[in-house]
Image (cartoon, rainbow, N blue to C red; front, top):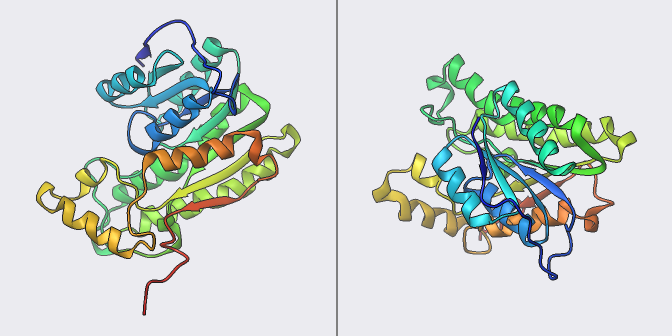
Length: 271
């Protein structure tokens, strides 16, 4: 595991208030939605750790976040990596108040497909990355979490509506949404809240992994046309929602889901 630290001292400014003195861990915080969340947490005063598998993007993300965040190279499907992430974060900062269980998505080398084309390895890969890792990220964090901590699971609007080739991914994310309820019940005695933030179509580099470059803008336009607000979401908007769930503003929000998809799930554009 590689360890990244831009500068040793922490710097907080007066306008950073909602998460001042809070320590956060954001898995998959080196790009896309995860980085947008880490950036928003940092803006509100949090310090902490981001994780990622790619050392180059991890280093770049830490440079952008500044001195209050460190980077730990880790694969969330490996139990020993998860254990080191929380142990090292606790040793560095002395507490952990927020965990954003963001790492997940597309399995490298295993494109989403219809049931006819899915192998057992494909299935296991998507479930391991999107469901199993979420459960055990929470489990490995527990020995280090402060009383009253906030855990934010990242779900997906895909859990609420079927789309071609996305059956396994959607099922895994639906299970993640359910986890927030059960885990909240398990952790009531420690006053730890578990909630789910479910993004819709967010403009991140992930599109470049599943769509040929020459079709990228056309595919994005298709999404824009079916989203009621007329555009794709931004990682920074997911960050603002995560700040709410991480802060005391959501102290009465437990075991539930924020569906941040521009109205795509609940509003129909049919005429």
